[in-house]
Length: 358
Ligand SMILES: *Cc1c(COP(=O)(O)O)cnc(C)c1O
Image (tube, rainbow, N blue to C red; front, top):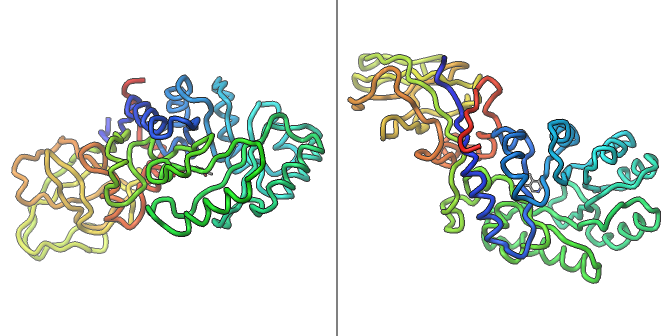
């Protein structure tokens, strides 16, 4: 078998979840397992966390339905909500909680003829989804008087810049949310991972922890609150060939990388078909036998090439770590010009997952 795989440590995910809870002891912390648990496998992560967590969150109805079909009975929040009467009917049958963020959804909810469990999203400055924050009281009254809610709703907002400690936009969003929800006797939810780590003043009745569960901090540059997090995914592949090339020879498609001196090139069995980013530049780090080696040449669909000049201890069959415990995903993401969220989420179906500590 090809050695390309994602090794997922469920104990790390549980430990990271417990850490998110410890950082906000007064809050209930909801694991966010959308997008296949950020590439880690939604059902496996749901089963690992359901016994510890008061509820789970996904982005879309289809994800929530797969949880239910797999027998997950925890409360489940659908963060983007549903958009038509059939969606509300399905949410009701599956006992899901849906996010309400605009008037069209409320019309569809009324048309579905059944009340639902809902959270209400308020726009405090991200301007992506949410009722104008100042309308909070009016929206709650309207839903309550029309009998459209099963339970008390949670009032929710999402922060645009929580990954920048001290950011003034975040301060303004927190003030706007406090002003809009003042006097309403309802639970509140503000924090994502970055806010759980860096904005204790944002911790509320419910926190929504996504990325940090998977073992990296969304805060760039090693914020101390992120240090206890344990990487949950080791993305690895096998070194399948080694060759010596002369100075002036080039490697891979487009001959992008050229040896300035005699070089040793290793070919590794992972490519963009596995979710390794095709736009990774030369120099993107990989980890082999205790050392970092740089990418050398364009990423192919099924292979990458790395510069192993001076690595005397490597041989065909060795395991290469693309990211994981020894090579933080944040370093790879920085080299590639993206964020760890995108790298982990894109690991493709072709890559088998091996679960530890299930
Ligand atoms: C994805 C998402 C989260 C989790 O964000 P992280 O940065 O991964 O912790 C929280 N809230 C909402 C509304 C989301 O869509």
